[in-house]
Length: 220
Image (cartoon, rainbow, N blue to C red; front, side):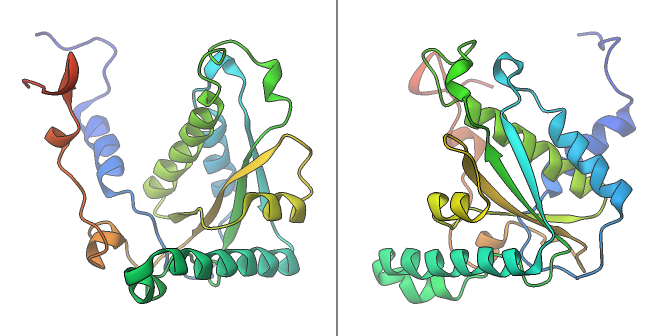
């Protein structure tokens, strides 16, 4: 098969695939500030994400108030304890995991779904959760851009959405999706941290790839 005239150079292709392979959910940061122009590039990468019906349902709140930052951390800690209790026999093991990096990261960004999403029908009439899928694409864009720039990013999802929405004064119908920790790191984990901590091992591609029907292995 001939090469596509639209493809990137080999070096550019390898850089994209390297960023995907080496992206990590980071929890250990240095407090050095992120340059404003660098942060703007990452935010623009997020904003260039695909979205169903071009609804662009993401809303990004940059947390610069130290008091609000501490209150967010308290919400995460409260849910961390509740999550640990729900783990039963793995409670102690879970409590030893580092599940957030808000103490030292340079930036905290809260990504939320916008309000009035019911007005957007294109692509959502039978699949209304495509707005959440679009927000996830924006987060992934930022994550990959951060890795390319040598910055770490971690997605914190351990919080009670209504409590965080109240704290940040989100309008009715809007909902927080992620707390993102962003900043400089001493090094990137050589593999996903949960694998390193023996919490869970990732599964192989063959285990999730089917052909024509569910559970029929694909022949690649």
